[in-house]
Image 1 (tube, rainbow, N blue to C red):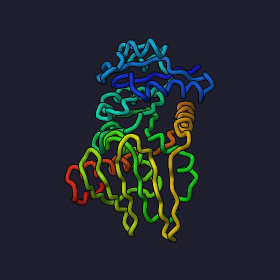
Image 2: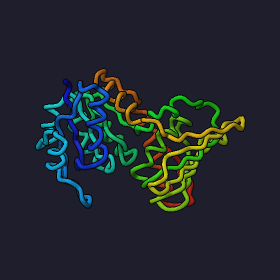
Image 3: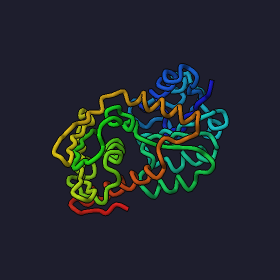
Length: 277
C-alpha cells in the first residue's frame, strides 16, 4: 500500500474531509491517506482542532511538514480556501522529489505562482480545478466558440478557479477583462479577441456551475457540470502519483493565474479594462 500525506493550513475543511475516501475508493485500498499536518487549528465556528480531526479520520497527525514528507510516498498540499498560504506550504513538498498535488487555487495570483515554481526542484507536481474533469466538458465540441455565459457560486477568490479553468480549456487565454459590481461578487467580461468573449457571474452558494455556449454558426449548447468529476479527478491524481507525469501543464496553470490576477484587478476598479499578461 502506498501512503499519502496531507499538508494543510487547517485540516477540518471539506477537501481534507472527503479526499481520503475518494482515494480509498479509486485505488481499491492500494493508496491511503495515512499522515497529515495542519499549520493551525480550524479558525471557523464549530471547526475541529487538527488533533480531533485526525482522531476522527483515523489518520496519524504529524508534528511538522517534514515528518509528513518523510513518511509519505505521495503528497497533497491542500489549503483550498487559503491559497495565500501555498507559497509557504509548498516549499518543502516541492523539493522532496515525491509526486505532489497542489489543491486549487494554485496561488493567489501570478507572482505567487511564479514564486512556487521557482522554489520547486526535482519534484513532479500539478494543480487544477476538479471541474476540469467534468465528463461533458471533456466531450463537447470546443471549436469555433464565439461566446460563453458562465455562472457559479461563492466568493471570487475561492471559486473563480472553477470557472476560469474550464473557460481556459474552452477558449484559451483571454486578452483583457472588464468588471462590473464589486470584488466580492463581480460580473466579469473576458475578451479573447476576434469578437470572442465570455461573461462570468458570481452568485449565491445555492447556484451551481453552468455555462451557455454559442458557436460562430449560431448553434448553442449548455454545460451543467453535473457529472462525478471529483471521482474522475481523483483517478487522474492517483495515476499521476504512480507515473510522475503531470496531466496539466504548468504553463496552462500560469495562464489561468494571469486571468485570475487580471479579474481581481478589474473587480477592484470596476469599469476599467485590464490587460492580461
